[in-house]
Image 1 (cartoon, rainbow, N blue to C red):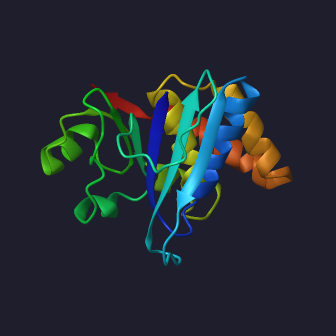
Image 2: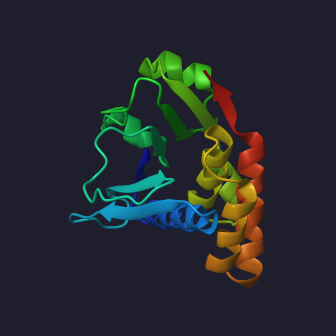
Length: 183
């Protein structure tokens, strides 16, 4: 089983991104879960969401405490939240940042496999909004080979209709192409 923990802020779309990935996995014939961890969240407050993916039914219903992948939608969270908590030793950290993986490693001492993309810049350029969830979907797909890019794009098109769907697909693809991996 592959487990994922999403860190973001209210309004950035972490919950929606987790749901899109789960639908894409199900469309590929996998078993999947997507769920948020709710407290007194409000727009801008830290939020957490989770995914699980497997080839067989998933019976666990708890939060994810030892993720294989951690996705960070807002790099300002790195100052106050231990996003690496419980990350498996061979895990992957996917971060939205304008900094390079080397700069992030230097600043925060990360010793894990990383994938970095400037999702905010991409979202602002294409969507004209700082909502980075679909960009982080592209980074996720590029950084871990769990789902096919086409599967995620198909669900994005279903979730966001018309022009919004086209723009979000552009964001996913651009982020996929711009994600920088560092082992």
